[in-house]
Length: 393
Image 1 (cartoon, rainbow, N blue to C red):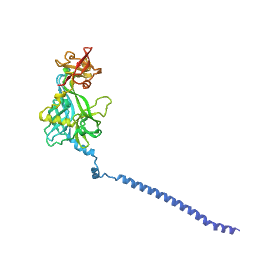
Image 2: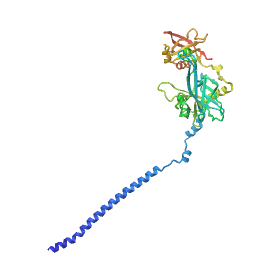
Image 3: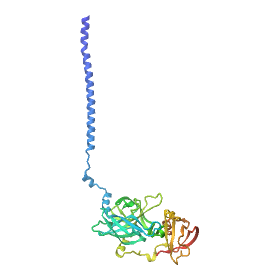
Image 4: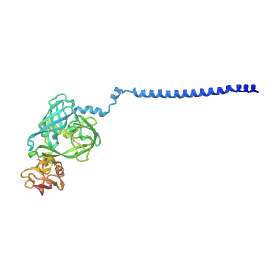
């Protein structure tokens, strides 16, 4: 019985060992499979990372795919210069003679150094410096200036300069792409901004500073109205006199103003190049410019007075109210006997006046022969009068 039991147990033992061995084999195979899978995944990731790491820029391919804007920039940038000016104030009541500096831009129109800019950029300057895109500094002379069109031509002694290609501003279309190049802030020469033509015809008024007023209290300003292009290309003080170019790199305007109103952005203006070219040719050839229709249309409606704008800081120092004051009245004019020297403008036809620009805007709404209702502060008393506007000379 015992023998049978032993034999029976020995007979069934081997299968148990075989089952255990099979289980171990399966477990080992599973581990190997997982390890191989993990290793394969690591190798795949490594190969993928290596693909990213070893990517290089194909310089020749990059150069062949340069955007049109980049090519335009290469063409127009060397044609724009930065301008710095110095003015001497000789009758400052409190501090004596003072030197003030200004900045603007210009566009080269001839290889031998003729440069377009705005008249207000160089108005009253005792010295003018021009810096080209390659950093060379020149002393410039004024060939001619036409303030009513806000255009001036400068000349530097140079040869072989790269010049702007003049386009046709009569063909400008609404919303076409444009580039403004200039010296924003007077410190960022060669800056390029892009935008579109927002309007092909606008009328704006700007102030031209002619000379310092009595006792250094302000600036003798003359207001002119201009027909301009409007753009949303970013422009800043210092861009004045710089170029507005189309997508072909052609000069289509001279930047002359940025809206200074509160919360107003994207409002830049430029004088159309066809107008600029007509003025510039005359300035270069004769030193002056006379509009072809001047004998018929005159230069707009005027009060026939000179004014001075006194800023708040200067007014406070001299115990006066800031604003626009009458500096002189033309003898025999419609204003003579009505307006007096030192009258401060309060309103024109009910519109409050604080600056010469606001006075200009109101006058620009009228024609010679129209009457306007003026309110002025005369020695602390409000005086009202009607004055007939004359034709500008």
